[in-house]
Image: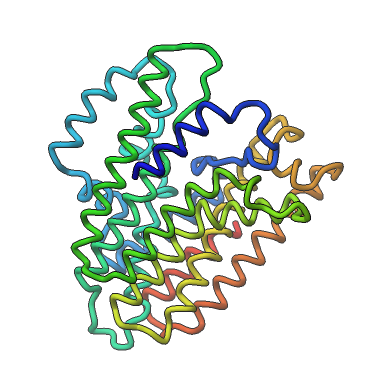
Amino acid sequence: MVFRSCLIRWKTHHLGSSIHPVVSFSRSLFASSQVYQTSWVQAVSNAEKVVGFPTSFLSLRSVANDEISNIAVYLKKLIGTGHPLITTAKNLVYSNDKTHQTRGLLVLLMSKAAKKESGQDILPEQRTLAEITELVHTAHLIHTGVINLNTPNANLEMGNKMAVLCGDFFLAHSCVQLATLQNLKVVELIAQAISDYSTAEFIEVVASENDSALDRWTQQMKLRYGSLIAHACQSTLILGNNVDLIEAGKSFGLEIALAWQANNEIQSYQNNANKADHVLSKLFPETPSVDVLSNFQAVRDRHVDAALKMLTAFPQNDASLALGNIVRALKY
């Protein structure tokens, strides 16, 4: 936890306009075309019926305690300051677009997809893991609300401190829940995902000089988004004793994460009036906008197809079909 906080503080003070343009990838999970949004919401809503949990319930049940009430008191002080932490909090609590509370749902679906008999239900430990996955992702969203301050600003500085403390609180709470699973391998996997979040902020340090811009994008997205879903899918199969499906589940988690983020970049690019400054233009420099979009759609589709291929290793049931529908919705 302390390591993560130190990394965030380092980023706040040392990363400014000199950051490599490839690192400044879009992190928005909210920009979506109407067609994609409709397909995605329908696929997620149908999937929720399979596992018996709405995605919002996972997050709310995980944080329904007195500590959250105390945090809310401090968050109120940030209203009107323009700090992004307020927007993040609103999107997490009030948003109904089902685009950023779906990681726990994927874990639940993966848990049920591995069941060889239709009567087998999701284990309590697997439901706890789904909540942990949501908590870790929420912590990441809050931590990335730390902003660079070129001039002193008391309100924004307080917002940065709140982002660090709130994110650390969610991580601490997830670690407490993780300990209740009493599985060292699962603890190790989720800890690796948390570590990878931090490593993603320093992609310029760990990347090879020979890596292309697209290679760096892929590497960063694996660390920032893919690692958590991949390790969570792997962990739920360990808890369910589905040893023969562990590698397929891990690969599926990684591929759907990359396809998901690639689609977010595409939706953002389509809705962005100034395409020259968009991350996709940096991935494909000196390329006409039509070709940029086509090139990156091919990247997304490769990951979609790879995720669907991984699902063929699982029994055909309602959960595996729901996972396939969620993946296919990313192509719209």
